[in-house]
Length: 246
Image (cartoon, helix red, strand yellow):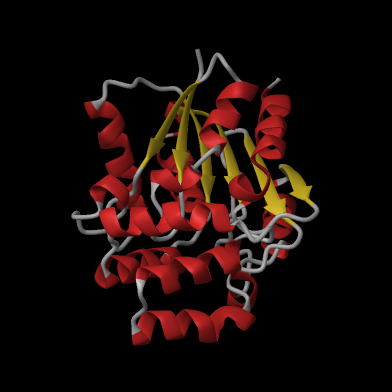
């Protein structure tokens, strides 16, 4: 049995994988799937988020040790979670069998205007500085991350935000950790698959393309999905992972 560890991005929690976990399990019925929260998010929202990605790695490893889940692990991670995966693969390569990274961006491969598209600066600043209701915040995030107008998940996201509120301080800490993180130039010692969305409105697909060139690893691109690829086309994503491992 293979063990897959799922990691989400900035100020997102394990619940945001939504229906994808069942879709993934259907594509790989023999896999054990565990979705972890990073400190400051989800069930761990009361904890203080670390200022650096390396500390997020150690926290994730501690969670698995408490659950007595032994390596090797396969990692599926997106955005900030993908940075955690890359740091993990370099710090503890013996623990990982593979990593699949979704719509991520990292220094030194990508300039800031590709890592966060400039068209979103004003909207994100308004939300962060002026304060926003849970409805406003999640509706904006959904618009930025999904190309399908998936209003069916909006109520779920608002409820998660109400149950597990991410503090402004923790969101800032995660943002700083992501901005400071610098991936090693060397190819990851772990087999790596990059997955990206051509029409990602938040992070330019050029980011994944640049990493694929530098690391000489495989890249698979979805033609129409947004930043939240598991939400917009979970079955496609699950099929790519099953085929890649197979």
